[in-house]
Structures are given as C-alpha cells and as structure tokens.
Image (cartoon, rainbow, N blue to C red; front, side, top):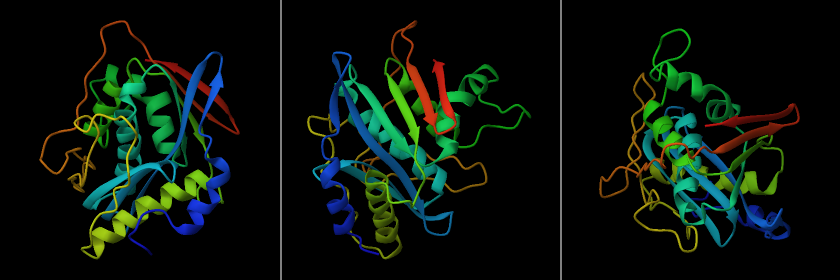
Length: 239
C-alpha cells in the first residue's frame, strides 16, 4: 500500500467527478467523501476526506480505531469548510455508525448527558461533542455509499486514509494532502492527531502542536439541518 495519498487509479477514477460544487436552489453544494482506516482496529489509523485530487486532507494516529477515523474525517471536513458555512455540505460516507450517530442517536445522547439508552457512556464522546458543536449552523446532508464498491470519491478517501495508517505503521512521513482552499489553518485539524484506543474508544482531536480542534457553538436557536440518506430512505434531523 502506498503512503503517498490516493492511488493513481483512484485519482483517475475521480477525473469525471471533479465537478463537486453545483447550483442548487440558488446556493452551492460542496460534495466530499469521508472515510477512516485502522490496521488492526485498534492499530495505526488514518482518516481522510476527498473532493478531487487538488482538494483533500488526511491525518491519523499511531493507535486508533476505524470508527474514530470515520468520525475524525467528518469533523475535519466540517472545520476545513467552516469559511463556506453558508453552502450545503454533502458528505458521502460508507459508515452507518457515523450517519446514525449524527442524524438519529445524538439528540437522545445529549438529553441523557451523553449516555446511551442503557445508561452506558457514549463511545468516542469527545469526538461526538466536537461534531455536535461544528454541525450547529450548518446544512449537512449525508448519503450512505457502499464501501469498496468502486465509488470514485469513496475509493479515493479510503485510499488516502489507508495511506496514513500505513505511514504510521511504517514510520513514514504522513501524506496530509493540500487541504481545502481558503481554510483557516488554525481551525482544521492539521497534521497527526493524537488519539486513545482505550476501552472507552474516545479519541481527542489534536494537532501536532497539541491544540485541541476548535468546537465553537453557534448562538442559541441556530439549528442545523442534518440529513442522512441511503437506498432505504432519508432521515431529517434538526439539531
């Protein structure tokens, strides 16, 4: 497995999908795939989001889980597009765990003090709290795509995430990618994030300087339309 980011094949597959922003009801939509990878689960882990070969970002941990990678990919995408918050963000994701967490389960977790229905703590709660904060004031639509099924953007994100995990495993430089044009370098998760693969499954999103990824909440009353869709229908949730 190459540690140089998305494979040449994945980049070629994405050439026909390079138009990732399109007019919709007078606004623009940013479309990106987000994915995570863990070699051993837990083990060396990576995360990545991918729009096209000129616009993608990746990072990871020496030790983490696949679910942590999936969540961090979405979190970094939200942070990287914060300066474009007025546009709809369409996230292609092969993780039902991520989609259900953010579109169905999170309101109940929050009401119960970040506990599940059985009273046990929510896994990856630190990442979930940051995602909750970053989703506020944003219009986000999730679409489930089948992993490893030839979807060009999903394949590219998977390749980039796996390349980071492999780089950590082999102690090689981390292929981070160019990032999102115009993104505030202080708001997105840059470089290698540190994480924990403890029994709680929690990971703390930090950059190489040790600064925690920002999670600024919008003013009270500014809800976010977060939708999850798949072949089985669409779930609309207002946060």
